[in-house]
Length: 293
Image (tube, rainbow, N blue to C red; front, top):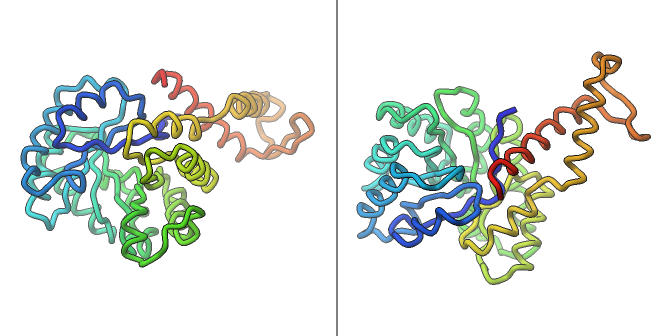
């Protein structure tokens, strides 16, 4: 089973040379090199050049590299997509995706600019239209040519545009998160929780990350390197989870259980769907171990 850990996905400003260099030492699973929100308008072109050079030059180890471009309708969007496609990151994050056509159009542009096959698309879910159309957006991932593999929740923008209140229990946010998780799972995509803004509040980050993990998120987007360790811890399978998963896999692998849909293991009823879940848990744990984080 081919999986990539996405426990910690850290935004890095594309215009900051020091940040791009420091990112090579941060134990995040993935880095979003940002050309959009983190970059002032007069620094957009320079940031594009720096980010694409950083991707081409490498040095980031096994970290997944994602370039967040500006929207196609902005003055920088088309050039961002062209440059990012030519640089060949692991993924390009498309902002403000509101309809499946936004992903389909981006995929056509990326393919036209001969992006390598490994370069996937991630969709930023940050508007009410994103949530209304999340099923159709996620469905675009069925077609390999659309390159869509991950949904990224933009909770700050969703709260702003919906006029909701940002309470700690995320009461207003939960329906949007849940709808996106269900859509992602239905069409085989990963989904990442939004950022926690107060990077000095370790307890708050832990509480929100645990909340996202309970809902079913694959990981959390982050705004500060100090948040990485907490996200890595919370979104990693525990030793007990991995050990139990290995037992399930081994039990279903026995010849006498090959045709069974349900077995009993240590006094518990275990279905074959649990074996599939266990395979993913073990694959994630092995991939984390391989990254050394």
